[in-house]
Picture (spheres, rainbow, N blue to C red):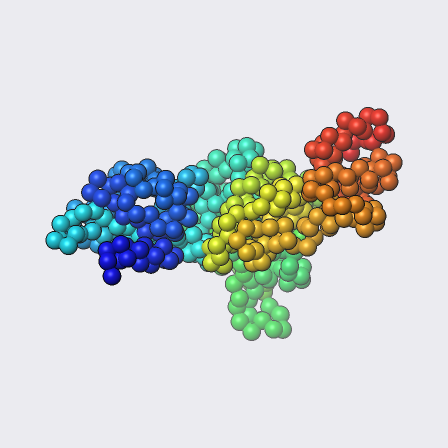
Length: 458
């Protein structure tokens, strides 16, 4: 086998690996760049070969502590070093690298070789297991959100109560864990209590514990969630569901740092930082005497409000990309992104289930997709037919298929005409809410026509 044949087989083998590999000469100019290196960095072979390696990988290690340089200078291998590279889209990717020196047939150093393994799946699983969330894990570019997040390190270290408000699925749990992990109690326990999931008759003993003999089945002492959270954090999720009498005991726990377990004859001292979360308007509950005013003001020493996803639509592309990479890495699938029609559907949807729903949508689609994530990979309720776009049978639309955009516009016009331009009735018939309908009308320039057609703004 001649040298050109050897080169072909070597390159074929290296391009078959699920690990990025590149080589450099003694001047750190890239001489080889395999297929996986293209995929992870976003740069093609043609773009990378001939460039200095630090212009492609752009990490702090490149200028301060280059592992490839150290391997070449010491003529030794550096194995399984964890670091982050930055791809051409400015996205940081955690990798594990191995660096080694390259010799020619006479033993002279001619360059170096580095391999890098994508660690995103491993990091995602570690985060799931350890719940080691940090401030950067709350993905948002919304100005109102970040104005609050910027204060979070100071708030976290104060150890005072925090009240997190927001609809179901916006990320209240993750924010609570971030507060815990940023605080001086990060090494202590994090205990979550879903106040809505425990019957009121059992909730007191769950929170504050009980003593042996306190009731028939109390065979031994049992510590409550507050005792389990000692020197750590307790999250009271759906705190609005607490019975009124338990609210008084919670207030005592907050103010005096003491609780009475059921059947106890004396108080027990507790030291747990309290974070409360709810998806309901506590101001209204206080006005209706369903929630104690004194407890409310004790809990809202610092109040964090997470807007619903429909009010921070600039976050949807960020979250789409984040969940796509995360789920594709965990499923070990090569997903090449989303089609334009898929992006449009996801950007226009209102997400009543918020971030949690978007995550489940991407998870469902990644499971089904083959390469690029297409419309047919989305859950059925997001299909154009389900959203009132093309092919609505009740409209009797038997025209030749149009583009998705034109078909949507045609469907909207027919629905509006059928309902004499009434927004509420049209939205109900299409199976979407008024806000979504109005946004679609604006995009298709149907609002301007409404001046002469009797249409009314929502």
